[in-house]
Image (cartoon, rainbow, N blue to C red; front, side, top):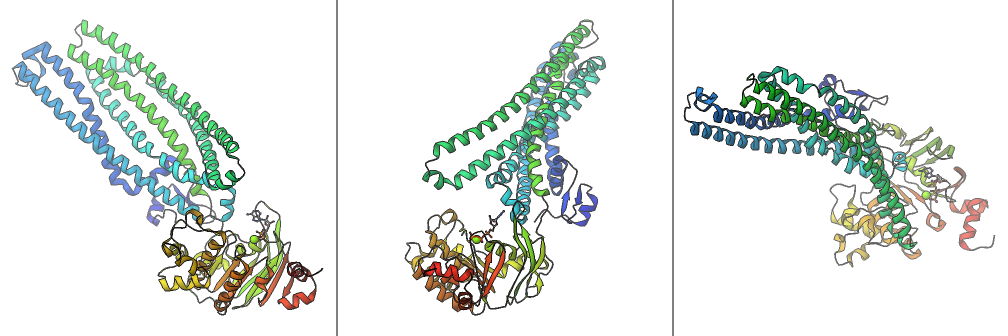
Amino acid sequence: MTKSFSNDEIDNNFLWGYNKNGFCVITNFSSFQRLFVYMKPYRLKIVMATLCAILQNVFDVFPEVLIGITIDVLVNKQNSFLGNWGIVNVISQLCVLAGLIFVIWCFQALFEYLSDVLWRNLAQIVQHDLRIDAYSHMQQLEMAYFEDKNTGELLTVLNEDVNQLEIFFDKGITDFIYFVVSVSLVGYIFFYLSPLIALCVFLPVPIIFLVAYVFQNRLGQLYAHVREKAGILGARLGNNLIGISTIKSYAMEDYELDRLRKDSNEYKNAYERSIGTSAAFIPIIRMTIAFGFVITIILGGWYALKGKLAIGSYSVLVSMTQRLLWPFIYLAKSMDVYKRSMACADRVFAVLDTPIGIKDGAVAASVDVKGKIEFKDISFAYPSGVQIFDNLSISVEPGQTVGVVGSTGSGKTTLIKLLLRFYDPEQGSILLDGIYTKDLTLRLLRQAFGFVSQDVFLFKGTIRENIAYGTDNITDEQIEYAARMAEIHDFIINLPDGYETIVGERGQKLSGGQRQRISIARAIVNKPPILIFDEATSSVDNETELSIQRSLEKIAKNHTVFVIAHRLSTIRHADNIFVLHKGVVVENGKHDDLVSLNGVYAKLWRVQTGEKQ
Ligand code: ATP
Ligand code: MG
């Protein structure tokens, strides 16, 4: 779920708006403002962290003032500033000053520690919230989004881009606070001691701001480019690691290494360009600072010689010029960090701004699903592809076992994707027990199905976890029963760790047929009202398939079952068989009727049984 705000928060917060789908988004505001919305719930922590950062910087300025007073002690002895306060002995005056400096540094160290801990913790909290929101939102996006994007690229956004935000809190904000506090405090001391010198020292400040403005615009573009290249590199890495067995089997290691080198080089070059600009920023500001320093030395020295400025004050001013202008370097650093982290934040917020295409219906009540399914005049084309269905209508009665056959690419899997609302048809409607599937919550709809997909996916974990996936409070007996039905129980118990065996990422440690059977067990364990098997037994031998079929026939009695199969023997006993050809149902009926019809199905059957055509 995307970060939810109370109505009050939404009303009070002008940053939030709603897009045309009613989805709560922040529009037309920079990622910076949006990050602050994320920080809003932690106001107290922010106030504390800011306070500690301010105090740390205040304590950091004082030793220099005390050094000025020390020089005053050495020059004026009993008549010094402290002497006037009643501490006549010079050694006592020095001891008091040393003690004060020590205490102040202790406080400075304490507040530096607190500020560091608080800001960095805050960074982790905001990163955590943002990561969870971005992932949660991403999970709700329709399949078309994931087909367009690359896993590695999305991973870079959720992981790298979110993690990079840490520098914004850790460095960006604290450097900016240092800049504000130091410039205000030291500026005040300057104006107090010598308004004319203060004015002269401030002369380069407008130039500094101008340079900062020009640089930050340029850095923004450069860092956006870096992040884009990071996404491409992440995509390549992700893709190659997933496809490592194909790379190895085609001996394409060198080729892939070259491709990765090219992407990595582009990332490196993009980063180098940003480093060039970012690194030039600080020296340019340093040069401008030097100008202010020269003015203080000459003008202050001349005033001191003429007796218009005390030597102690002059020494304070000289060391303070650095103090006054140095923070502008931190302003530059903070701007650099700001631009770098906002380039990352932009990408995270772009995910959060992606509208959800497949929206939840309102009917959430747990109804007793009977399993009647109707496809009514549906037309559908993939966003990038050709028309798959044009006015297709199919009706399935509760408890029926339905076979769907057809040549490869005829739209069988697409039909199931529409039923499960991975996609919505452009026209027409799909009904479950007479209710439009669009009106049901996605959770309710999808929980009505047990789906064995053509591309079986197992999670890294134990066999037990994989079978129980998606079900609550499932007992060991139920898991074992489902495994027996899927003809996999005997195999599992013969493994050294039995049901606790780890299957590896994507179930890599199992054979294709074993993976399929575990996914059959997963689909049936909760006894959902409708079962869908998309080429579910394509990788198992004929004998095992027959056993699975016999088991499933028992289960099928009270269920609606869709069986998609190329091997026609699998669907031979179905109550109704739909023959799809290029997205159109060309024939339907029982096996024997279709064979005697002598059409497409009969031809397929003859091919598979080896009969002469
Ligand atoms: P098979 O028997 O090989 O599994 P199928 O009947 O299940 O085939 P579908 O997966 O439904 O076929 O695909 C139907 C058509 O839609 C194919 O031509 C395929 O190329 C196309 N297609 C499938 N998925 C997408 C997608 N995500 N984007 C664009 N086109 C797609
Ligand atoms: Mg398919």
